[in-house]
Every structure is written in structure tokens, then in C-alpha cells.
Length: 219
Image 1 (cartoon, helix red, strand yellow):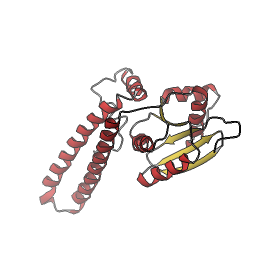
Image 2 (cartoon, helix red, strand yellow):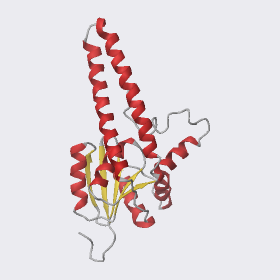
Image 3 (cartoon, helix red, strand yellow):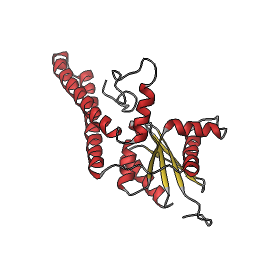
Image 4 (cartoon, helix red, strand yellow):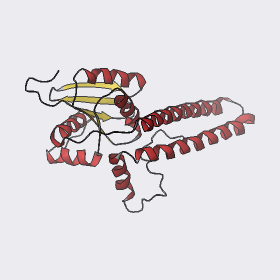
């Protein structure tokens, strides 16, 4: 579905915990999808029909990792963008307002103008990323289940439930450390970590990117 003058097709995606907001430039198409397994599959079907040159998504952290993996697996030309550079680009074109839809437009425009390179991970790293994200999600589901039981069950079993929750918390922390190593292999993610840790009073003691990237942590 290229335009007649064969312009590049750049797809900008603003990613949130709940939604994926997608803008196709220069065609002006816009759609929103839920940021879950079913929504991601639908988003990929939507994007594929445009045969994009780039599918651009900001390196904000945990919310976009599932889409990044799924899009990469689907053979889409994915580009993980430096969030700070995209924001500066938006400011340079006079963009002051900020909404999910406008952010998606800016990301697509950034791709068209700056033409950033595609983001690659070795196949074995992608498989590990997928497995870790799956196990982490399962751990969070188990944590929610145990927290609900803590509300319903008698106090006589609260200690056992808290022990289970403690084990889950430790396992999620271990998974986050492994995800950190994978994230460090994606340059724009590492740049985001460097920017955070360069701030005064922020150092490696702060669990970056766990606290800033992997949201939905067990608490």
C-alpha cells in the first residue's frame, strides 16, 4: 500500500501499559489496540498491510517489550528509538501539546526524517527474551492470586501465603536482572539507562532499569 510517489512508510507507536496507539505516515492512518497478546496480534495484522519501511517504538521500557518481540518475530522492520531524541525532535518542529495520538505521529515523523537503523537481537536472545517475559507474567499472575487469597483466607495460613509471595518477589527480581542484561544489548535501551543513572543521586544502587523499565513489579 505504498503511495504513488513511493514514499517511505513509517509506523509510529506510542506504547502504554494498556494501549498501543499507532500512526501510519504519510497515509495518516491511526488505530489503537490493547497492549496484550490479542491486541498485539491485531496490531501486527494492521501494520503488515502497509508494508512499512520502519515500525518505530520508543525505548520506554517494559510496556513495549512484548510488542517488540512479537513484531520482530513477525518479520517487521522494528526500530527501537531513543525516547529523549524523539522528544527533542518533537520540540524542534514546534510540538508542545502531548497526547498518545500526537506522540504516535511524532514518532512516525521522526522515523521519516531521521531514518534510524533497525534494531536487531540475535535469535537466541529473542527466544530468551520471550521466555523470560512469559515466566515473569506468570509470576505476576501467581502473585495476584496469592494476594487475593491473603484477603480471603484465615490468619492461620497467612504466614505460608506471605512466604510464597516472598519467593515470587525474589524470582521476579532474578528475572529482571536477566532482562537487564538483554536490554543492555539494545543500544537505545542502554542509553536510557545511562541517562537515568547519570542524574545526581541516582546510581547503580537504584534498581535500574527494573524500577524504571519493568513496571508491574511485585510489591
